[in-house]
Image (cartoon, rainbow, N blue to C red; front, side, top):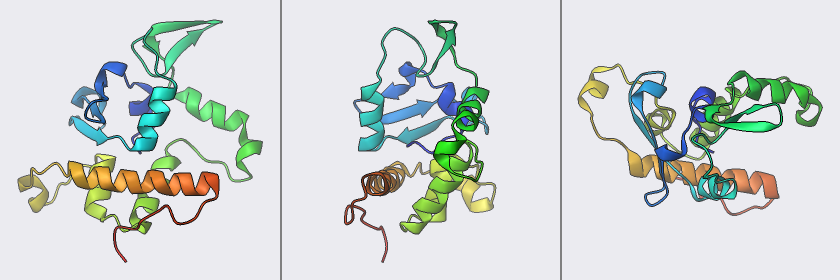
Length: 170
């Protein structure tokens, strides 16, 4: 629901989440482009986080050693791919990876009318063109609006409902 890289999600720490401002603040040392990144959390993302909120450890996805949890280590990034492979029959014939969820999210956001610039900001891609170098605006409200629209689309798909998604453009 955050559309972030699998490694960033696996390494997420509870201390990075600000539930008052509904945001995940990823430090630059944890991002691919080494830039800190604020991810607005949709109402669905907040609901999911609150459903498995753990206060006994540092990480959202703590490492498991045998039958116990190591609260001071995060699970391995490869475990996401491994879990998908183990349950491939549930997902259908076409193999996919956790990173494919970012592609799906980017395409879904665009289909809802979210501009490529905002999609790029949500994905934390570095803008290397001249305007991107000068433009220091964070696009937080636009990212929030896009992620909320995407969350509504996911709810519509999962629950089989119509009419909940409000496209940003006609």
